[in-house]
Image 1 (spheres, rainbow, N blue to C red):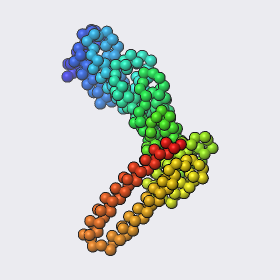
Image 2: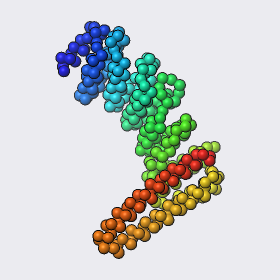
Image 3: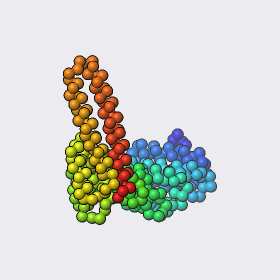
Image 4: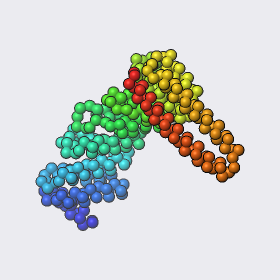
Length: 313
């Protein structure tokens, strides 16, 4: 193995035109080996050398042309100190000619990988700027729902609720739906408090959809916390604020129905204490299954209501 690696390095240095397509697999292995031994800079130096030499090599295959940048970006994304080099590889002005040879899905997966790495290292500004570049006309593909989900989730975990909503509205503006990420992440009490603050600020701005989504996010959050009374109060506020009229009564019936089901399950659990141990175990399993079905149906209904809100605003 070492002999093969030495042979390839010698070819690159002295006779790059003699590199064969099969040598690409060994180059890829060498990049991974450097990475596994915490030698990221050495891996990048090897990639730059190989990338320069391949320009004078007619034997360089399309597979190798795609393999090496893909591996290198993954390697660079593994360290905070080098993730910006991966970002440069995506956005550098000299990259487009190479990028054009990649399939759209491959380019998008690499962009997603870099966004994930930037968010992991909490460099949210760089991740957001990359998304802006993906939206703008250029060599990079437009962002997918998965890309937005990554940065929205990262903002939520970091407590940057306002930034999360900014990304939500950006995704909405290009025809993507990502609000379910918010409803999953804001069920914590601190996220709910922050969302209420943003809602009060949003009421001073002319954005009916934004306000409606904030209300819906809070309602779903209270549903997850089993605080149905607060969810119903929010529905009243929505009506008073004239956020939307279509399906408001249906929304109210849904929340009221969920509350009644929760009360029924609570009573049924209390009655379990009167049963014999064997019967109680069976009844508990049945209640668990019924509760799971109720929860799944409720989430589907709430998501349907979310779509109705979008259509009516």
